[in-house]
Image (cartoon, rainbow over all chains, first blue to last red; front, side, top):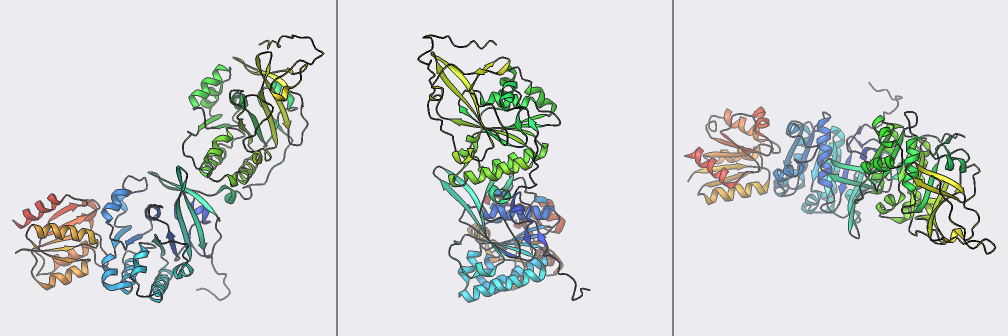
Length: 498
Length: 118
């Protein structure tokens, strides 16, 4: 028996079982709560509610799905059948579908409450979905009667510990009585961004619990619904404290390590900036070729398939393919499609966590930028993402492609992002005597000195090699090197010697 | 004229089944759940019942059991309809005469009704 001084136990949760949603809700719905899922037709309400029911049934729970619309369950089940979560064996024992359309038509809200109460009791349901709240609202003779209906439903839900999801296509911007009365309001949207669409969820209200605020993307596929909690919300503070270290991580190219005075500072983020074809991916393959069981590597790339990368590495004399076979390196290719920015971030963080990755090569930043539907959030997104990668102990190299092959201006893809990176390395082409030379320079390294000179580098079948400082010419940063006026009229370009 | 009772909680399903059977020359009574179905049975003789499995208040299995236990209704043939498979239905009630898996073709419904009432 509970004594007056006993601490009040926290409200129990009913986990949705939906990937990412329970993270947004800090554990799930509160048991016995009444929640509105709102969105225009096609926003994903019905699929989401059904998946919650099936996942609940799969965990041993019991759910009732009541429709108030003249919609056929048969059709609904046919649409759900191809989805991975669909399991006919739970119907009707653990998941029961009924229509209360007739009841609403004949007996009004009073009859509907009676049906819902009996279904909760009769099916021993601890989860009830009412699909088509708008029909109940339309059949209410007055706002007062509709409030009374919501109130009675809340009372039954609370008394029986049954969590209720009310699905409606009404517009949330018209804040009405039911929104103030229920325990939570979830708004689903399918927004158009020029030619593409992106689904999102906003939790407008969630009584009795914290939650991740703002707009969270989600995707519906045959695997079901997957939410991707907004990176800036979920990683507002890194999941673990930043562990500072003086350790250096070899980039796998002695000449660059020397320019970095020993390598990249461990658990930092580096921008590798340069035009197409300069050798950014080659640097990354060197970096990954140094991966081991103690320092697992990951290539998170958008442009080249794993097979092509392994071939490329072989042409450079690097055994990345063997490292993949050993499990020291994973090549995670992200085909260039309509990616969701937060989905990419969660996939990346998941892969880093799964193998405790220490050497991370992201090829490249452009893949993330092209997925961003809102440019305003890019800087903050990368700030949170890179903070988390640091906290996880990953030494990260991002490639950042610049549009100009040569020229006096280097246009960094996102200046807001480059400011967040601790180390910056530039690769550039310089024309000298009708030959395009490759140059490398280090612009900043966190808490460390570095070789400030511009050095020539060469890519051969034995990999990338750094040569001498590109001395004896001027105008290098304009993209076209000139012999100083005092120098001899024609000096042949240096022989790479490899 | 033979009378068929159609019991289904989905308005669309009732409308389709009732229209098809009326076109075939049957008199159709309809009910939205098992409780209403029992009330309709009490109103007069019924030659066949077409019953949906999942319904609110009194479901198809419960209605079927009540009919089989009632002296006046125990011999009325029953066509059970459901979107779930027959094995699931049979676990709850196996006293039906025929089973139709939803969605079914109109011809399948007519053939089944004609066969039972022949």
